[in-house]
Image 1: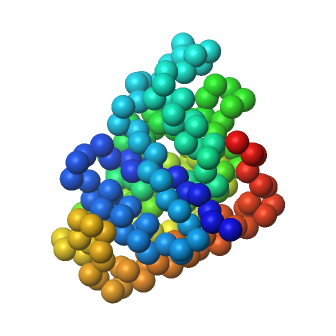
Image 2: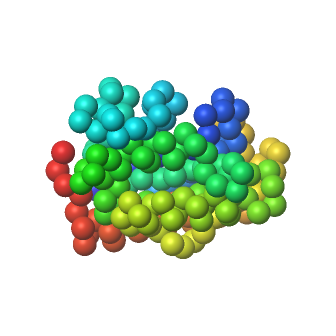
Image 3: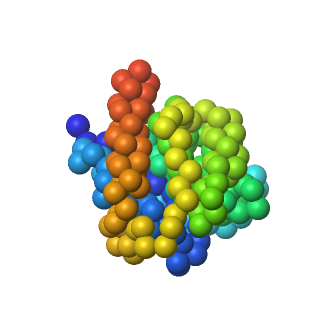
Length: 190
């Protein structure tokens, strides 16, 4: 079986180190995981006024998640929390009430920063939101990546052997987590 994994990059920056991290994660993941980035850049701000008729960008987000077996969040930390664009995407995906795209979805959270605590506080904030959304989160290993210059090339190649092992272990565990969750709670057919 091949697991279809959607991933979010929480940053909208064209030079995001978390986008670079996402490339490394995809490259180091087990071969039976296929990844598709779920774009968030063009989403309008969420409002319940749209619940009866989602705009095309928001419907595309929900359709992309419906095709996924699991979801990976790769997020920076903004002001000790998650970026507004990522929270907005989660709000769209979890609505309208009763149509939460994250319900029972296997999920993993990771992020990188140039700071020494990585994205620890943002990840805890994101975990709280995902708990409310009833996502089935991988709780360990946690990975708060303090990304040093040159450790990951722009194409995702990891030159730091220790970091490569951490990321490989994280993705192997995410693969096992996804399999375990789907064994108990299969995803609905699209």
